[in-house]
Structure formats: C-alpha cells, structure tokens
Image 1 (cartoon, rainbow, N blue to C red):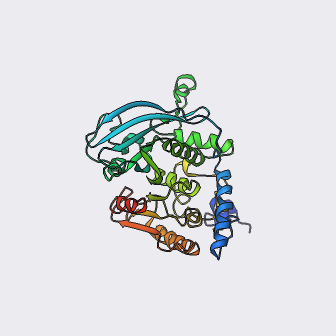
Image 2: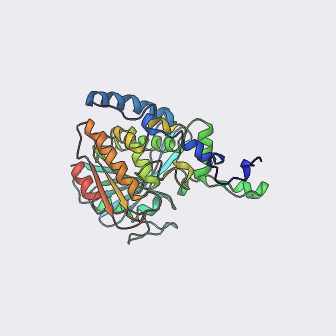
Image 3: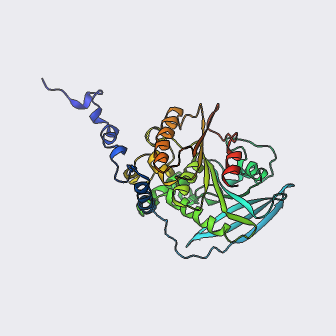
Length: 356
C-alpha cells in the first residue's frame, strides 16, 4: 500500500525551513571567528571587516559633499536642539538632530543615538509625532537621546532610513491601481536586495557620513565617540560599530542575541536581513570586529523578540572571542526586569567611563 507523503503532516522534509536550518552551520562559516592567537584575530578582523562591508552593500563613499543645512535651533533650557539635513550619498539626504548641553565643557564627547521602529527620530529627542515638544520620557525609547544629553554628551540622532521623514511615498498605488501601500522598510529591503545590497548597508553608510559631518564641528570631540541604539537602532549600532572604528564604545539595547534565536526564529522586519550574512557565522563572531572596544548589552527579562537565554549564551561566546584579543572584561551587561525597552540603568555611566 502506498503512502501519500503530501498528507503526512509529520514529515518535516515538507517544510522549507527544515532543509534550510540543516544548512545553518555558523561554526563552519567561511568568515566565522576561529582565531587562536591575538595575531590571528587581528588578521581575521581586518579581512572580515572588508568582506562584511562588501556583503551589506552601499558602503563605499561616492564622493558626495555633505552639504549640511541648519533648519532650526531650539532652546530647551539646559541644552540646545539643532535640526539639520546632510547629504549621505548621491540622491540621498538625511535629517538629524544635534543636542548640545549648555553647561558641559567643550569640546564635547559625542554619542550617536539610533532610534528603533516607531514614528522616527522625534521619539528619542523629546518630540511627539506631530512635532510638539515633550518633557516627560515616553514609550520604549524613553527619550534616551535627551537622557544622554543631560548626562553631558553631545548627541547626534539621525532619522534612520525608512522612518519619519524618510519614508517612501506610495500614494500612487492607491490612486492609480488600487493597491495597498507596502511599508518603507519592506520595499526598501527588497529593492536593496535586488541591487545587491541591504537596508543594513544603507544605514551603516548614513552613519559613517554622519560621523564625517561631526568631525567638522570644532565644539565636538570626535575622538570620544560612542553609539547607542534600541531594537532596529541596536542593529544599526552593532553593525556601525563593527565597521566604523571611529566609534570607541557602544550600547546595544534590545538587539544583541543570536540570529538563530531572534531575527531568524520569528517575524521580524525585512530591514534586519542581509543576503549572505550566514557566511560570517553568528552575532558573537561579528562581535570580534568590535573587539577590543568596550560594549554594553541591555536585555529585558520579558523581551519576546530577543530572548534572554540567547542573549546570555551569545554574550558568553563573545567573551571567549574577546579573550583571544586580550580584551577580557570589556563586554558589559544590563540584565533588567522588563520588556523590549531602553533601560539606561548602566548605559550612561558606562559611556561616560568609556569616553572619558
């Protein structure tokens, strides 16, 4: 008697993910971290940084002028908030806010503040989505750019590609062909994939150009440069720190984990994905490109999309990588009780000490 395999719900080989997971072997990844000595680790780091930049795409500078334009300057009492726009590539502009504490000694240490999903950069600089001023921290971002400024840092907070003012206008779909609008993230990701890159690459490029701009401001000490981000901003922080050595320390909130247990295990925005990223192993392998620079990971006990167990395991494996660089003790954690949100309990003091 023959059996119809299509009616056998228990045959896992019918499921596409089953076969794909059998190919998920970070321990044998071509660019995974396998160094045994510091010399080998440094050689791996240099080669892998180049390979990662090529894989995420859009990382080469095209020679475009920054063309910074000041749009407004708002006095918020103990700090000034500037809004500017710069050009990060040909046909690409990026708005950003620069928060400057009045009383802190110049030149100021600087922190890049990368927001996550939501209504955009306004949600971290003390503004409601309609542009009205806000004076009480709100939401999972907790106005952390303002908190950084009040801690004495100049804070550069860009509008990340696909959010806020940087969303694609799909209104033509409704008016001309009756289609629903896709999200800017999903559309940009698919278009970037088609062109051989990724949204990750676009955002890292924008971050590099932002640092280029900050280096032109005499009141800022770009030699004391940090980065901090939550969720999608944590992703931005992670990859930017891997690839831009000018960032001396970073705080990764609600992102650092493992790809296997977070990004690849459940529904996540398409902007998180990079074709071919599997050749670099896991997040703890990529942490080797941050070494020996210090970084702090914030992880909520009830964060459903970046599970605590995976975070702890990935931290332990990253610490082993750091050990090869003779950088033991440079990975810090803030395991707090809560969900997917900024903690800040240790982050601001960590950045003060790291950028002193």
